[in-house]
Image (cartoon, rainbow, N blue to C red; front, side, top):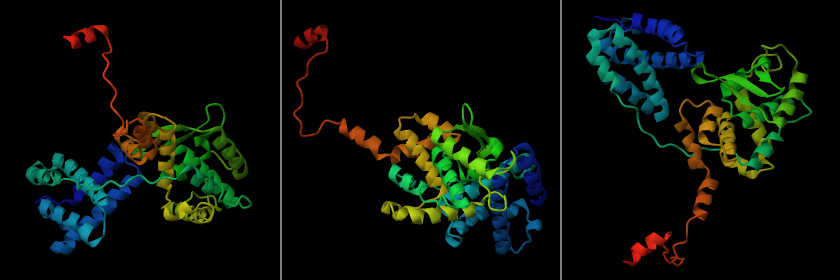
Length: 329
């Protein structure tokens, strides 16, 4: 008998927290996955989670758990795959501690992720961006904060956690103006700021005040904005902007859409995808490929270069005298 409890505890305490130095978001996501898995297994077998053995969590149970996520919890294939990644991470760790269960662990690790359709990236057009940035009420403190936040989000493409997590000390508005942030995998990067963004941030930070460790975009009480708060302010300003640009009404607006908008702006300006990947903090340049599929202007330029099928073909002319001689033989 090999109880799973000690291994799960050391996985979180040693593997994630110390060895991998996983972010709080990663630890939370993994914790939620194993809460769901242990409760599912308890309901299925009647065993208390602390009494479960590795034999109770074989490939059949894990597969049934993944099916349960989709069928009973309405999880998408992407969420299902994220849960599976957490499970596989634990089992890879367990393989070193429980070689006696090597066959069972290997079978779980062999469970493949589920394929799914990748939706076309959603982003805002320039006139929609202008309408959104003009929506916050500049006569109110919250409106001035929100405008600065939206300008920074659209120009830098920061993730939501990065946007709400930056402090005054992370913003450099002098020569070589930039913002520092910590992204996925605790990777730090710097994103340059345009003169327009610098001006807006300088005005906002002068009003906001505070110390170096204080959040750039706080609540009225000085705390960092929550994810829900950002979602709500986006919905509020979208409603106002939608009255000026009706096309916004049919679009879903999230912080990630602003990130996509930044990427599309860079792409349309001719910036190489490798640079865009660095700008956005992508670990793999392939993560930037969806923007190529979403940009119709690139495809339209390619289409314009194609000779119409109805045009008369030109007469072949050898590009060289020697080739002309050989063609005449």
